[in-house]
Each structure stands twice: as C-alpha cells, then as structure tokens.
Image 1: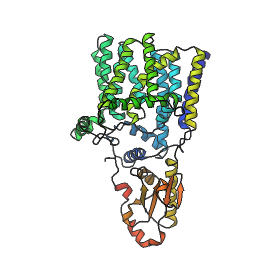
Image 2: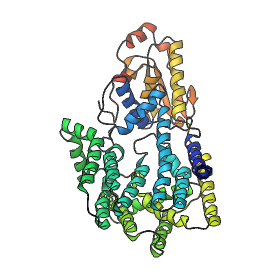
Image 3: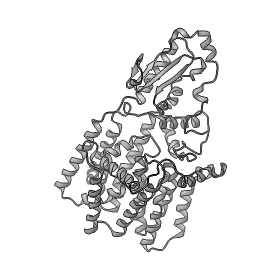
Image 4: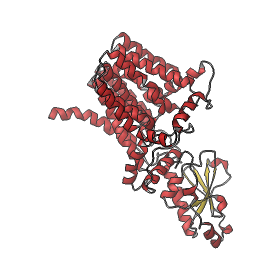
Length: 485
C-alpha cells in the first residue's frame, strides 16, 4: 500500500502544478469577450427562459453551429456560481485536469509509465496547453479529443474491440467541438484494415449507437430545419470564404500554423525560433523513431497520414485559417517526441524537462495581459449602475467608441448585474465605452484599458428619462450576433 501511494506522488504533483497554472490570476486574466457573452446567453436562455436548446453559437461559417454539449456542461458551473460567468473558468479547469490525466493514461497504456509521465508533465506545464485550457470555449477540448483519438487508433491496430466504443464517443463529440475533426476519420478504417483482425459487427453497432446518441441534437435540429447545417457545410467546401491562396504558399500557411503552435507548446514565447526549424527538428524525431523502431511502423504510418490529411484539407479550404484549427493535428508531432524523451537517461531527461519547465512557466507567469477583460468590464458596468442610481436613472443607453467587434462582450454582464440598457436613440442617458483610449481626446474615468465618458447630465430631464425607460430592455430584445433563438 505504501509503494502504491509513492507512485501517486509524482502524478499528483504534476496535476497540482497544472491546476496552479490554470488558476493563476484566473479572474484578472479572464479575457471575457463575445464568445463568453454567447455562452452566458445560452445559459440564461436555458436556466431563466426554460428553453431546451439543440445548438450552441453560430460559427464563422454562416449556417453552421457548434453543438450544445459544452454549453450544457457549463450550465452546471454557472449554477454553482449563481450564474456568475466566472463559473465557466472552473468548468474548463475540470476538463483540463482530465486532459492532463489523459496524456498520462494514454501514453502509459501505449508505451510505458516513463513516457506517460513525460507526456503528463508536458501537458500540465506547456505554455500553449495552459493558455488553451484557460479558454472557456467549445474548441478548448480539441487537443484532449486528439489524444483519445490516438488511443483509439492504437486500440484498433491491436484488434481491441473497445476501440469501436471509444471511436463512437469521439465521433459523436465532433460537432460539439470542431467539425474539422471529421477529416481524420479515415484513419479509423485504415487502422482496422492494418490490424487484419475480424470485425465484430456487434461492437461496431454499439459504437454507432454511442455516436448517434451524442449527435442526437444535430439530428433533431436538421430534421426540424430541413438539413440547413448539412447544406451549409457542403456549400462551405465549394464556396470561396475569403481565404483562397494560390500556389505553394497555401501549403506553407498550414505549416506556419503548425510550426508556430508547436514552438509555443515546447518553448513558449521567450525564445524566438523560426517555425521551419521547429518542424525540421520534429520531423527529424520522426526519422529517428523510424530508424530505431521505437514506434510500430503501422502507427507511425497512420500518424503521417494524419499529418497529410490536415495539410491537404487546410491548404485547399477557402476559409481564412485560425491557429486553433490545427490543434487536432499537434499530437502527431508530440507522440514521437514523447517516445524519444522516454528513452533518455535520467540525468538528460531531467535536464530537458527542467529547461522545458523553466521556459514555459516563466513565459506564462511573466506574460502581459491587457486589462480589458472580465474584471474591467465588471467594474465598469458596476460603476455605470451605481452612477445611474445616484442620478435616479432607471435605465441607461450605451454607445461604443471602438474598433469594429470590440463593442461585443458586454451584454450578459449587463443582464447579470441587473442593468437595463437601451439604444442611444432611445432618449436614455448615454454612457460611452471607449477602447482603445487613444482614439478619443478625453475620458471621464477608466477601468484598465477601458475608458468611460459620462452622459451630459444637464441634457436629461428626469421625466423624459423615466418615459424613455418605460420601454423594453433592448439588451434583452435586440438580436445578438452568433446567437439564434
């Protein structure tokens, strides 16, 4: 029993370190924006309005929505925190702890305890992983999904029938995270073929049922709305969405994103390294594990196909690519690296991991976060509410002096903090929110990087204000970009 507890000391320490990094200044670094507003609006719609929702927010591709699973998961944490959006931080914290453990479990099962511990340490401390795990957004678990997809391929290659069950769950989760994950599903068929094992159709059926159950909101939504998302998805594959690039650079743009993400994962932002060098070194690791036969050739081959599928798809996809689209492919490069590190002698492994921890932890703890997030918005709205009450205003109007897009990310906080907000043309007293501060000559007060200009109090007659405030709350009735009733 004593030896068993000793074995838990190192994993426990690693998880504790991961929790610390993910909770460090969690409130002041909570970059509350439009996506969080949409999450809060979903929670309010479910909890307050009693509306059972089949979809989450609309994506940047018109007509395609994110599945609701992540949003329903967050409802639990919002309720625990009395609908305060800070509860969402603890929702992703729990997911991130599961992610750190998953790296440990998967790589231990596939290779060894030593490799599992290296992978666990990496996932707990990596600057990129920590930053990703602090994002209260449905795409946050994509890296977690990719780890379990790797394990699914491993199980199927070994002829393990449980692979069909895990595959079913992962397929059912795709719509709830990122539809781009569909592109790696052919790897499941290749793994089954390479295993040369007889397919147990009963287990395939169970996997199909699991996938169907998790995709049920999508099925019901498509039936109710005539397959609108299916049509939008097919259209997106054949329509120019503004990201068409001619020539070989379309491939380089994908490699740039992969290299930059991997550089951030391994070294953090402190060291400036060209993405090409990062990719060359990691491909060198691939060659090394192939020559030394540290990885089964079939698995290594599937990892290479995984990489090719991402490269080909995003090189030819017409949408402007965000870096997080590549997150589902990063495990392809990390797997050989973890295996090689697991072969290092203790003193060399300690030196590598100590360097890794130093670079990433220092990068994270010393990063500069612009003060325009949750705390600043909360304090600004509280100030407006208190000032309005002092002047006997039962409502206010808000105008935004800002660059396009930065006017979003306030509406749930208005509702949560009990502030009735109308449009500036309503006749209600107008408070102006400014960001960045340099675009105006003066402000009356500031909250971090957010400025506030007071109303011209002399312009507002109390009776006229009361009449203006008798109408509906525009904050509740106006449409919200990305949110569909």
